[in-house]
Length: 86
Image 1 (cartoon, rainbow, N blue to C red):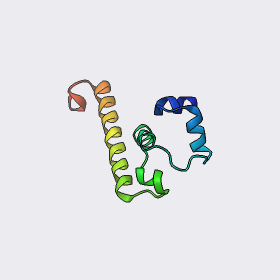
Image 2: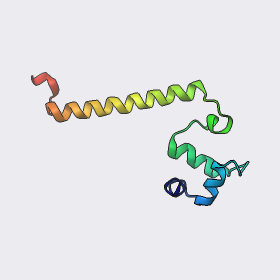
Image 3: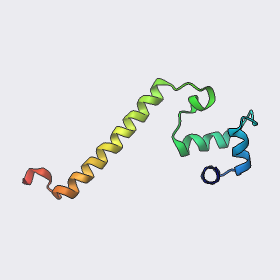
Image 4: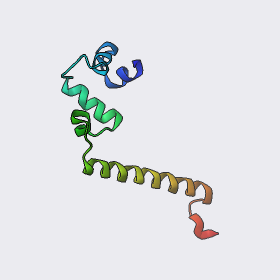
């Protein structure tokens, strides 16, 4: 909980109260920090339901990151000219 509180810029006690359900209305800036830091759907955070468009955007973003990792790995393995030299 300490690392999460530090990452979000709030007190550990305050975060523990939210987690325990003792705080009914967390501050908007804390909710925004959770959304940004942990890449969660803001709709889900507020309602418990994930929007289809948010889920599709997350899938696309992850696919893009995976594609960049694959290209980087191939560049390391095959060099700057890629597999065309082989």
